Image (tube, one colour):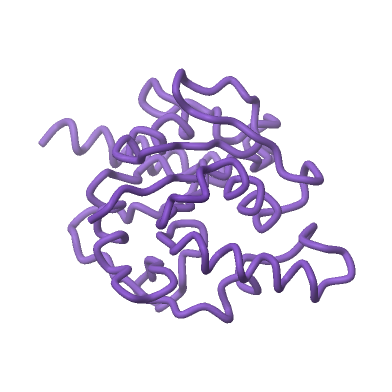
Length: 202
């Protein structure tokens, strides 16, 4: 496989966790965002969109326009911040503390000639913030969506962005918790910490 860039969407609110910056919440001693960045260590470039802006050395940072404009606006900002020569881009949320290098490689291996590859859960639901994409295909879809919406990209849904694209759906059959598990509540965090504790005990 050729190299790739990575965009981490870290602008999620932590209102249900009692704080404003959800990806900065610690899990097993590291923020969720930094655990996601660890899973993307093989990328030629990694860019974080939104959040506190306090990113590790060597990681780029940008903001969506307008701030709080939603995931599609954030994807557009991330794509604008990476080298246009990057053929492939992995786009993931910043609150996926169980994402792994292996999961990222699995998505990229399934791209083939498609526009994108997304994990699907056991009920067939696409995990729209855990995928690998042809950067040019995403850019085209973003441009079309911005042209067709009176309000531009602000508030646009990821479902609308990917709907016109050729997407390979990837199941995850490895034992254990899925790599796309996102943390929206304290209960989600508790489950993740239990899973990670169990892994260490094996």
